[in-house]
Every structure is written in structure tokens, then in C-alpha cells.
Image (cartoon, rainbow, N blue to C red; front, side, top):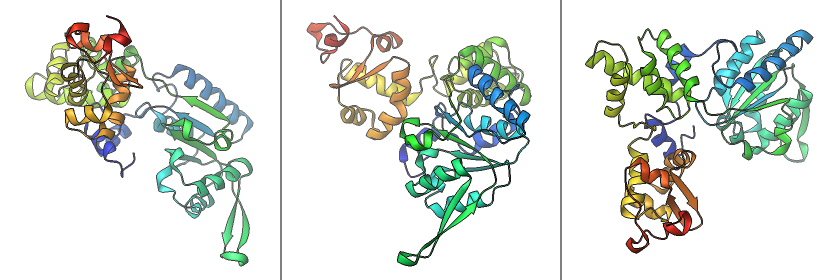
Length: 356
């Protein structure tokens, strides 16, 4: 998370936001699977990673460097810990924003033990000097430490024990090719299907000692945006409601009532999502409308609308970004039970894009 970015603070406050706050981190530590057999979903990634780790153990060598990309909340940190557990190695956890100088990285690398796993979250946000040092460390297990300044500076080579770097990124496209090419195994984490999220919810409910029915789990899974972190967060909030308002058992009706209280609808849209779509539909006839105008209409910053609300709305097919501005799709009109205005009623040119 970029703590300097106000949009990240907004994302962290949302019940359906994929960023993890301190409560999420504490709960995730208790719910986190310990090995690949326990890990739910990401079948291809698990199968491929299992082969990589088994082969490394059979050779008695450290595993290849691993790059995990995908949206927040899909299990990249969990997989890094599983890699360390499968290799029976310790793990060191840090993040790209924490490494602002090459010396920061050199201090971490020089203290690694042989075979240790170094998990580098948000690896695309490392400083350029540290990034360049990492090239040599990954390929040759060596870094050059610069001593002194100016003409008298001297590079002292420092040998490193073999280690496994696990890099995680939400923006793989920002990684420079020389860094990306040094990873022996790369995997992209996909969003989860509802059936997979139901399995996640049942497992978490068991660990949290919460009684939940199949229909209750399905109701929560359908509103979790394909993200296990959100599924677990919604489960905890529904659990609270069930304990206070009912007998503690989560049924479909209890889940619906609880999520209505928290303003999460049946497609996983929350207050901000609905505000953006309702402004687009009711105030601007479905668009197109400029991002700044839309942000003013919902009383949010431009960056909040663009980076927090829009990605999910676009992925759900409810909103489209066009050269002329933001446009509501036919699915958005259907979701809100509204009828698109005809050509005579205006509509800001929406019919030019979707037909009359």
C-alpha cells in the first residue's frame, strides 16, 4: 500500500476494498494456509509452483526466483510463506517502498542465510539504484558495495549465499524487462470463481468457529469481488451481525440482512460504486462524461474515482472508459432498474456507442 496516496486510505476504509488494514493482517495470519495442499484456488499456479519446489528439493538446491503478479488480496503473500515452508527455509519480508537506497538492499541481502526466502512486496516500487543492485544479486549472488565518494570510491564485491527471491506486484507492466527476465518462475494470480470463494469461506468459518450454511456462504461469496481477502472480511462482519441480531448461525437471510446494513449489494457494489454509477446514469444520462465532472458530482477526488471505484466497475462491465469520457453500459441500467433515455431524451450521445 502506498501510504502517501490518499486513494489508498480510501481503499483501506472500504469494506469491499482489496487493501489490507491491520485487522485484516492479524486475521489473515491466523487463517493463512500452511502448504500448497491447503491453498484454495489458483489451480494452474499451484500445480506449476509445486513442480518447481519439488524439483528444487530433489536437487538439494534453492528454488528459482519467483514473481507473483495480480490484484491485491489474491494470496501472493500467502504463497510466499508457503514457498518458504515447502523449502523448510526461513523467510524475510520487506517491500519495495521500504528500499529507497541501494544500501538498504545491501544490508538485507548481506544478512540472508543460505536458502532463505526473501519476499519483496510491491517490487515495482523499489528505487532504481536498488533495482540495479538486485540484478547482480539474483543472477550471480553477489553485490558490489561502494565505499567512499567521488574519484576515490571503491567497489568491494560481497558474495551472497544462495537465496530465493519472491517478488510480488500488482503492476507487472511497471517492472523493467531486465528484472522480470531474472525470475525463473512467473505466475499471474487470477480472480476467484464464486465456488472457490465458498470453499475459502467455509474453511475460514471453521477456523473462526462460526456456523455457516451453504446458502449463507454462497451469498457472501457472490458479493466478494472474486477476492479471498474481501470474502474473509465480509464473513467477519456477517458473523458480528449473526451474533448480535440472530442465534449466531449464518444463513442466506442473515447474510443478506447483514450486508444490507453494510451497504454491499448483490454484485459487491458499495456506497462509492453506486454513487458513481447513479450520478452517471441519473445526472448525465449514461454519459459520456469527463472524469473530473463525475468526481465533482459524487463529492470525491478524481483519483479516488479513477483508482478506487472504476477498476471493479469496468471489470464487471458496468462502466466503460472511452476517449469521450465515462459511459454507463447497458448492464448498469439493468442493475439499477432504469431505462436508457431514447435519442429524443438526450443521453449525451450514449446511443452512438451502444445503439438506440
